[in-house]
Image (cartoon, rainbow, N blue to C red; front, side, top):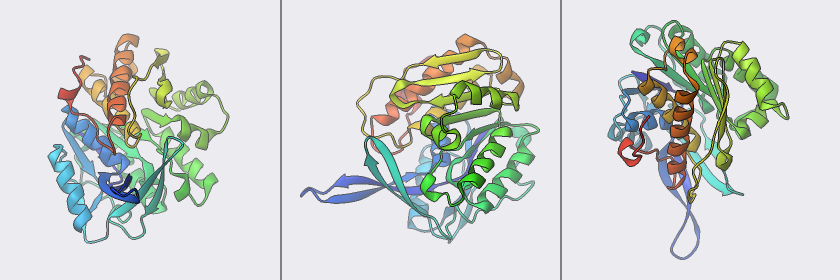
Length: 311
C-alpha cells in the first residue's frame, strides 16, 4: 500500500451565478487527500491517514475518497468541523483563505503502532498539516515510525497566509526535507522557502542530506529534477487549455509516485538505482497528469483510462 497523510478539506471554488454575481462552489480538496485520490485513480493500492469530520462536509470528503478507491481504514473520524478553503484566482494563480481552527484535520493525532509500515511502500506528507505545531509533531512521529521500511515523499505545498512565524516554518520545512527520500515542490514554494537561491544548489544540498530525488515544478515551463546518480533531467509541460491550476501539483506528485511504483523504483534502494530513461518517463507521465488536471475545475486528478500512457 501507499499512503498519504495530512489535510482533507472542502475548497469553495470561484464561479458566477447566471446574473453575473460571484459565487462559490464546494468541492473536495486538501493537498494530501488529493495525492491519495490521484494515486488510487491511477490504480495503486492507496490509503489516507488523517482526520475527517462526521459533519456534512466530512461525509462529502469520505464519499468522494471512497468513490476513487481510497482506503479510509486509517482515518480518524470526529465531530469536529471540516476545514474550509475559499479560493480565488489572481493573475492565473490560486489564492486561498482557510478556516481551520478546531477542525478534524487540525486535531488529528497519530497513534504509534497503529499502522503496519512493513506493508507500506511509501508515505507522502506535506501541506497545511505541517503549518501548525501539533500537526507537524504528529506527522514527524509518523515519519519516525515509517522510515525504517517506507519511502518518504514530501511536498511542502506552502500556504504563506497561514504562516505566523516564517523563520520557524522554514526551519521546520527543512527538517522534513532532511527526512525525505523524494522531495517535490513548486517554483512558488521554492521562492518562498529559499528566495533567490539556485535550484541546482539547493537540490544538491538536499541530495547530500539523503534524498534520492528532488523535483521542482514550474507550471507551463515543465519540471526539472535532480537525482543522486542520474543528475539533472527536465521535462516539458503539455499544452492545454487551463480551467484552473487547483490540485495540479498534487496530481503531479501522485502520478510520479505511481510511475515509480509501477516501474519498481519506489523503494528507497530501488529509487537510488533508477536510470535516466525510466526517470524521464516517470516525470513526463506526472506532467501529463498535472496537465490534464488543469483542464477541469478543482482538484480532479485523472483516472488511468483517461491517459493512454505506457510507462
